[in-house]
Length: 236
Image (tube, rainbow, N blue to C red; front, side, top):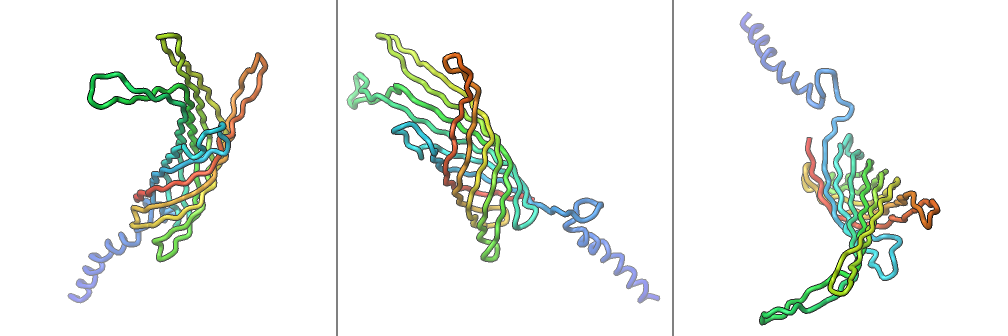
């Protein structure tokens, strides 16, 4: 009798632990989750080279920033939302020496004219990855489908004798875009990794305009190639 009581007591003591262990990987009492996904956020920065620029412009002068967040439903797939920003500035400046009573000369610059380009793709991303080297090195290919907002601005310094003013003109264009990127991540930890990627973004935003009173559709080729480095922050 003492042996039976001891066995029952042991089972009652162990059962909760076994039950809790059996529930690991489940999401609530409804059963096992088909997507035991871990979340992630990626921050990226690099350069963007436009396919088409005005004569004399440096096509690789753009700064291409990005943030991405999503889930990893399996070691081979990531699904998320991405937001990128191409910031590009070009201009013509005039150097001058400021007349001041100092021992060292004071130099300055006046921007005579310049352009500003801001391209913001917002959309979804699917990444296929293949961990190698015990999962520490993860090559991947990703595809993005985005809605692109493009802002173009031109500004010029106007001089009329001693009076000066700045004339500005800006336009907004909108359209769909797509991105294909190849990369590799060095997974230093389950919650942290460093990555490098190179890719191509295709973008042709447009806007209805009037030229000499005639309605036209203005289209801008904002596509180009990019190279970026970044870091991944993982969480469960």
